[in-house]
Length: 395
Image (cartoon, rainbow, N blue to C red):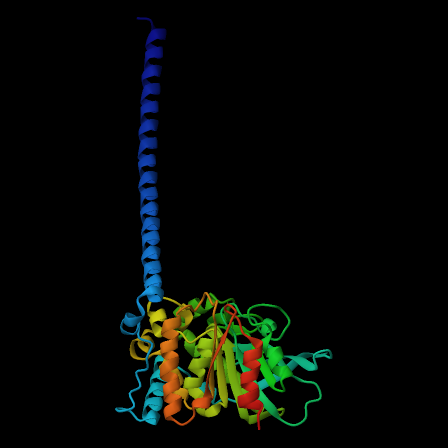
C-alpha cells in the first residue's frame, strides 16, 4: 500500500473522528438546551395554571350564590358592641395599626416647612394654582414632597383645607388639572367650591424625592419595593407619614382654617384615605374615599398593591373596621357601577350595611354617605364636590 493511500486513510479516520466528536458535542449541547427549554415551559405552564386558579378564585368571589357570600367572604366588622365600647375598640385598632405599620410618631411631631416655587392664576376658572414643596424640618434630605396648592382668587379669610392622596400611577399634575386621567382634576374642582386644596406626589413619584443611604434615590412606583426590602420599613408607614406632612402643611397655612381640614383620594388613594382617617380621625373634619370600599378578602386573595399589604392587619381586622375607628366622623364612599378594579359589589354592600348601622346607633346616620355613579374607576366630581360642600363648607 502506497504512502499516499495510507495518508488518505489516516485523514479520513481523523475526519470521521472529528465529525463524530462534533456531533456528540452538539447532541450534548442540544440536550442541555432542551432541558432548559423544558424547565422554562414547565415554569410558564405552572404560572398559567396558577393564574387560572387565581382567576377561578376571583370569579368565585364574584359569582358565589348570594346566600353563601357572607359566610365565605365576610365583609363585616370585627367590632362587637356587646363586648367592646366604641372608644376602646378605636383605641386598640389605632394602637395596632401604628405598631404593625411601624409609624414614626416622633417624625410626625416635627415642624413642617412649605415653600412656593411658582404660581399661575387661572382667570377663567377663578383659581390660583401654586407650585409648592414641603417637608418635615430636618427630614428634607430623606424625603421631600412636591405638589400644588389650589385656592380661589381673592379669597377672603381662612378657608377649609383638603389634601389629596394619589392612586396607583396617579399624578399631582392631573389632580391639579394640568393633565387628564381618572381623577378628572378633582383638586381643581374642589378649589373652585371655596377650599384650599393641597395635592402632591408621593415621595418616590413625580418631582418629589426619596433618598436612602449613600445618597441613593428611589424613583417611580416600583422603587418603593426596593426601599421596603432595603430598609425594612413598610409602604404604609411611608404613605401615612407623607400624608400627615400634608395635613401639617395645611395647618400651618395662614389661609386655612385648621378646624376644618379633610382628606380625599381615589383607588389606592381612597384606601389610604380610609387608613389615614382610622389613625387620625380626631384631627380631621371629614374624609371621602373614591374607588375603595372593598373587603379585605380581596387583599387576602392577592388583590391590590403589595406596597400596602400587611398581613397582620388583614388577619385581625376588616376594611369596615377602619371606618369604625373614624366614626362618627363624616365619611363618604364613592363607587362606580362600571368599575372594573373593585368589582365586589355584594361584599362592599355588606360592608356598607355594617357601617350604616354603626352610624345609626351613634345617632349620626347623616354622617355616612354612599355615592354610586354610572362611571368606571374614576372620581365623580359632582358627587365629591357635593359631599364637601355639605360637610366642610356649610356653616
